[in-house]
Image: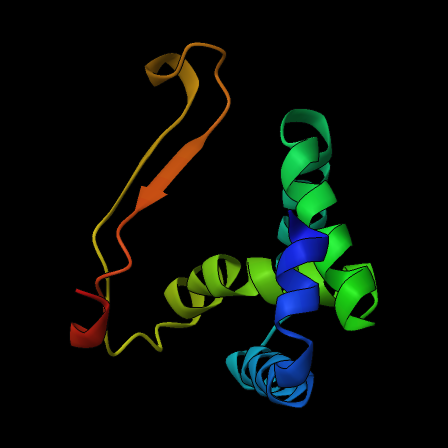
Length: 124
């Protein structure tokens, strides 16, 4: 499925590359640090364990669009993981509806994070 998406979006590759560059620049401005990098690695490891189909989809997109897999995965996850930077550095000016559970509140003690993408009106 990822490869099909990538093939269909090839004509947009330059815009996608600009979006990736912009998001990575935003992470730098937000102060991406060792803690953020560890969160990325932990999230990637968790996906390797429980969501290989999603990783295969990103791999297919990356191949079809001629991006490095890690670049496209980091771009895709950055939207969610960036919230950690914003919360830790107190730079949030907008927000979204979220909840989290961990420990005895989950079946296996592993954390769960859920959120609505409603922090901009156009997302509603």
